[in-house]
Length: 136
Image (cartoon, rainbow, N blue to C red):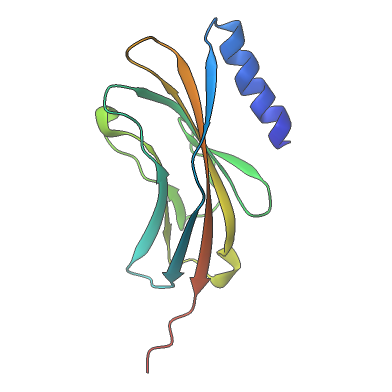
């Protein structure tokens, strides 16, 4: 499923005449203590004048969901962190999620570059560890 989706994204950009460059960022490790009022987020920044065209997230179950432009995330406590156009980046927030959400998430962000109209697909893995609070 993931391979078919990526193949579709690449085929779309090739048919449109764009060259696609894949960028893989280093893995990040995060720890989050479950709290109903506080959250954490993962994200791939987009340069100021570039335009993010889409954002996908792959859950630890290896299921891919689109977060932007159409938000298809199935969980209310896992959400796309939207902003105004100029400052939009591929960012996903987690709020009050249980330990079952621990695992490796992968973000995929496609951006059109302002300088030469080329397209880059940026990927980054996030290893999230969720723990229950153990306050006295």
